[in-house]
Length: 393
Image (cartoon, rainbow, N blue to C red):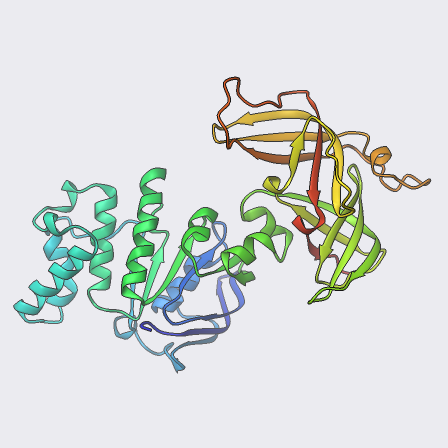
């Protein structure tokens, strides 16, 4: 496996009174496609610049393959960076742009010609060698930047929102190409983005950052299906996030210990959810369920399973997108439908729940559920998730 293992421990960085990074620790594996994901201003680009050597942390350590690299200047680290604006030389041809890192090392002409040819072939630009950057599309410029960054044969490639200047379709195409290049080269990629779909599409693992803190590190599946906090649940895709109180807990005997918890959610009613974390009656929690996990129907589902949540609602707003329809459904009669106790524990203003229904079959008349329809919503207890147990609960 090529590339370098990167160990980041206890990194702090401030600019004036603003704390950009707060005790950041990460282990990035050799050859991994690792993404730093978060909103603007969360610290991800600053962390990338520290890895590159363009910034120094106030505290903490940074190691490549067990060796401290903080004293090592950027040009001596086995790292190269691709920026948002590509930073190509407009007066040089594609060939000379890619060859530039070899020229400044005074490489032999034969080596330059051979390597430039190989890397242009890698990014599928061998027929564009004599063009200038102003004669290229945005995607082609991006490929030139990738070839120039890789020709130095770095152990680590840093990518700072490299696709942000491209339109949506080209961005998706370039993502696939980036992933294929990573598979061929095999070095460590660290990818900075604020786009959740980009990170989910190509990453081996993702670190989600907010306000200088690492909130969760995991595979795309772990981050999406088992978010560690309410922020992660909201930031990664769409979700329904509600506050509730645990009223009952039952231990389930499985290969791993799980619990079936029953929650009271004001305006929604009683909801069942399975969890591997032990919770207790009376605790205040946050609960999430993804819109695509919820089944919507105009007829009441028939089921004998006791782990199915079911409630009634009215379609408040349908949004048709061709391949799917997103429904905003206002829960109705939540207390009565879900069995509130005599003290009205489930009382509260009706909540609005987002539901996504995929259109897998052809329909002449469009979606079969429309505005103001009375509907039933149902989902398995296994499809919900407790994202946080509130302090002091």
